[in-house]
Length: 262
Ligand SMILES: Cc1cc2nc3c(=O)[nH]c(=O)nc-3n(C[C@H](O)[C@H](O)[C@H](O)COP(=O)(O)OP(=O)(O)OC[C@H]3O[C@@H](n4cnc5c(N)ncnc54)[C@H](O)[C@@H]3O)c2cc1C
Image 1: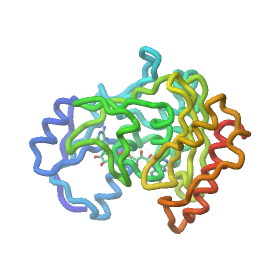
Image 2 (image 1 turned 120 degrees about the vertical axis):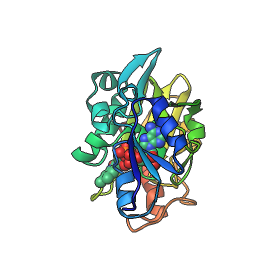
Image 3 (image 1 turned 90 degrees about the vertical axis):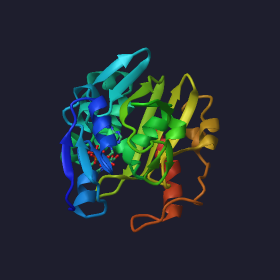
């Protein structure tokens, strides 16, 4: 690990002020990705601004037909939240599948989305539920947020404050886990809400993406039989030591059907 200046922020404004005052800062959430990156000397920030004391960044509430989850809320808190389990059970289930107990107790929704790992679980839910990402500067629709591998619409120093998930009529999530890390090799989140049916895939490509053909097939209702025979193209999908692009394309259909009970 290279040397850096460690700072603790007391509020959102304090965090962004400290970030701007530093020459090359990083925000620290639960450290589940950032600490590993720093330990491996893959990054060399001048300052690390810890968000752990920012009370405004923690909590879950139901507000105007949506579940609002603040950025520093851990995966375990989402997985065990009575409001999330009641209003969007598939989202609580997804949070409960992330990593292992240590990762779920430290990792946060804000850190996960800012990182935009191609295999991260939340992006599929954010896209399928048509969530809105709130930052200290603006709101960003899910469709505009994920831009590529580890790349989002966030600008340098822009802080995610909360994520607002419209409550769907129906939703389901299924994933095929990497047996070692538990990250999805492919995960599918399917939701039916006031914006129609949305199907989003994670793990398969450089970042989470929607499947318009699947959404069209399910427009009349979330019946897994309507997905039988549909294929996903392997073009542009990831190939690595865990799975080929062709295998991931195959898993997309299987996971999408299972997400809705098939
Ligand atoms: C063994 C292991 C298994 C895992 N398995 C899974 C899995 O199955 N599914 C899955 O989805 N994830 C998985 N993860 C990732 C984990 O869920 C964390 O969410 C992820 O690593 C981010 O960690 P964090 O929230 O602690 O953020 P950090 O590591 O602290 O930060 C990550 C990045 O986000 C930035 N950041 C943090 N918070 C904010 C914010 N509010 N606004 C703007 N930028 C911010 C940081 O500057 C940094 O660049 C796994 C991780 C590990 C170590």
